[in-house]
Length: 228
Image (cartoon, rainbow, N blue to C red; front, side, top):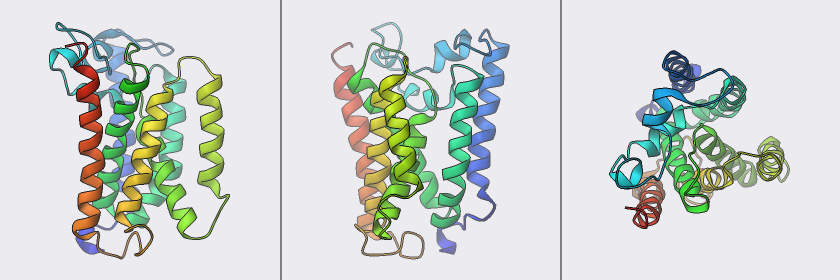
C-alpha cells in the first residue's frame, strides 16, 4: 500500500478542489460571471469539438482535460466540489493516492468522450464526469462488499434522474464518467478477486485502467474526425 502513496489526509482531493476553485476565480477575472460561464478561460478550455479553426477539431486536445476544471457558475462549482469531497476523500484514503489519481483522470477522460459522443455540438464544462467516475467506482466497491443499495447507488440514481430532467446537463459526460470509473475499479480489483487497496494492481489492473483511458481517447478522436 505504501507503494501507491497512502491516501491519508485526502491531499489529492483537497488539491483537486483547490485547482477547481482557482480556475473559477481566474474565470471570473477574465470575463465570466458568478452565474454563467464565459470569458477567456471558457473559450480556451471548454470541451468544444469546433472546426478547423477552434476546438478539438483544430487540434486543441487539452480541452479533454481542462474542461473538467471549468464551471459555469458558483452553484455548479459548489455542487460538484461537495460531491467530490464526499466521495473522493474516502476513496482516496481507501485506494491510496496513486490509484486514486489514475481513477480520477481516466474518469475525466471517459466523461469527455461520453459528452462528445452523445452531444458533440454543445460546449461542455465541469468536474461532473470525473465525479460520476468516483460514483461508479464506489458502486463497484459496494457491490463487491455485498451492499446492494448503498450511498453510491442512491446518489447515482438521484443524479441520473436530475441529468435527464434538468436542462443544460451533459448526459453523455455523466454516463461516460460513470462507466469509466466503474470499469477502472473493476480492473483495479481484478473483478472483485482482490482488495482494492491492499492488493497489487499488477499488470492486469494497470492495463485495465490504461485501456479505459485509451478507449476514451479513441472514441473522442473518432468522433472529432467528422468535424476536422
